[in-house]
Image (cartoon, rainbow, N blue to C red; front, top):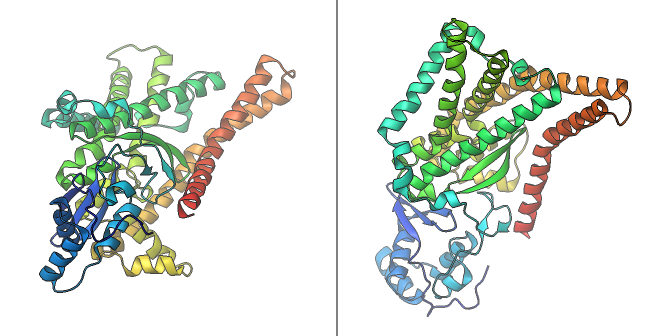
Length: 421
């Protein structure tokens, strides 16, 4: 792109951009307001430093040429910042930066939309910091360890797909299960946002797709402005919450199975449903190939920048020829990404196998029961009767769950096309 008002005399407004050293010769350059970050060489960080000091484009080019011994296209660099979403054209031309107008929908740049941060992101850090201190994390880990011990001691506590049905009425069971699961999913994401707020990072909640699953996702792009060590707590916060809920669901059933307490049968089944939900969520987060919470932890720990795409393309080229653009991505990939991808691809393939197993052992059996019951009711019940409408409702529910990931995939592809245009 070319910005008509940007020339040698311009003084781009870059003072609001964050510059942080990431590696020996790499720097993270980003705009915390829009959540957009890029990695630049040391020369790029020096360029921003000079612009922030008030130098014009021509002065910066002259200083850098003297320091580096070769010419630097400052105008092209500033235009790149605009394309990356770190600056808008007014800021590039030297106007005072205002409120962030737009941000990319995700790392692939799928369309643009107004920045809308949830109220939770405005919570002062001191309010939520106790939830993520040493004592809190000791509690979270303790809940997970205690739960694993109870699972080992009593295998009957392990979940089964049948646990999704709390009562004999399938429609009511699915209603209860889905309301509870969705409610816990929202709190899971809010816990990510709380941890982000504790670290001083704003957040945004959105609907996304991971493989065949429809998921809620907390956008914490601002974490990339923080040192790696400060990112782990927000990344793991959702799993910490899930571990507490899992412990709360397993402990009463463990005590009940040993006759220590008395529980109503419906409560036992409800707790079993919670166990199924939370085990599924925690297992899902370990599927790094879907860019889940554990993927972010692993990418941060290894210092990778584009591990998922590099791994996917390295596997894809074994099956069919890559496009010129894909070949260029692999050719220009960071050395760390290429090195880690050699073993990460094993986790990638294992994740695909796990998802297939989960579908065969949980999704399809549950769908078979649901659709079988619905079809039986619709055939046997009088048309327009209560049970007939229950069957219709179940079919609609199943269709929504099956088609939601496809709808989101189409939405993302359309946004990508609009962004490319």
